[in-house]
Image (cartoon, rainbow, N blue to C red; front, side, top):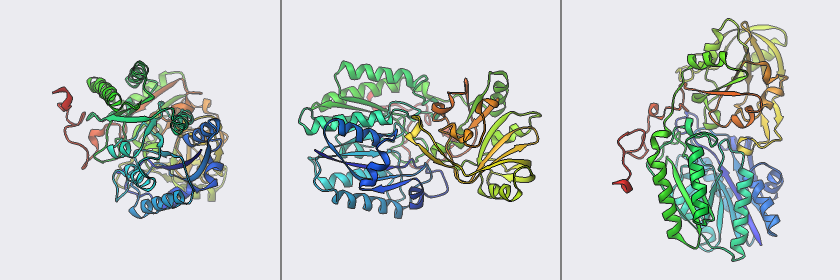
Length: 495
């Protein structure tokens, strides 16, 4: 039993000005053949789960192709075509296969394919024919499309956000594949697509309303003896017609059952749509609350969410903290030029810097002042525990630790680095518990790492291309009559 492994993962923010190129994938993951198995065999990732689950089931995992890039702007047409061509070429070279396990993200957008995941999955289906089982995983931030569902036999979303169960879900997908190839089951899937975009602020699986809905979904799965059920929050920063929430159910050779349960769950979600709206805490209120709580308090900077494709340069919270008389706070910004200046000045010296921000001020004005160079670092570190995204190796590039006159600690990196590991601080000799406030450029993903040291989290409403308030974004391609953009939106099933 030979099962091919394929991954193409990218969360595309269409509101980002920069485009994603092949270089972005080469800087993260772009491997094929046996390198796929070597790269993922022990990873906290669905591909690692695929490998382990297949081997436990007596099947041979066959590395085909894997590509991943940190969330960023729309993928160029040239890059997406090249990735797809490499994927299909490697699949043709893999030899006879009994099935394919796939790991798309589900919110990938290319200049020439708004539903990029649906596009490459369809090409895989056309290449191998209608009878070969194609199963896999999706990020719950997928903007699930009918094309993705039609091209595959079973798709399983991660059930946690922060995503710490990727390996587990990959393992479960592998088990389904083995049972299918053996003829024990015949999975069929069906989806429902309510016209609902859920605020990123309300997408944590440990909190309401996601916590209750996931529990309801699991009860329905068990009551109806489904093979699996998945809930998709959707990715609001991809301006495509598929943007929004969805429910997908998998039954054993019973398409009508899968569809009826998906419809029932989607109806339940739709009836609770008012619970999916954000609360939008402003910066001043967040800082005041953080002063009064037991520290460290993590301020989640939603408008500069690196894990959703932002530039990691927003200074809105940093500017407010700079105005404090005394400030035991940590802030990270990406600014290669500032790192270079700090390197030239040297440890122990002070210099005038202008850090972060952007000319159009979507990310605030540059942070200006005198800063002491506390330390300089290579920026490479590893994370051993399961954290959001299953990522284990991080590269911030050359990194400078600076201190402002009021005591605020600033980490300036060469490469954007999502706050998915405390190693971001400890690698630089910083003790996270020494701070009253830690600013993390994310919404839900940082919780997996930072809850080890932070007893409190406050989500902060800041401007930017990942603003939590979707109604600030200028959509051109989303579905019309969609909640919350149109509060009087109706779903046809309720009419």
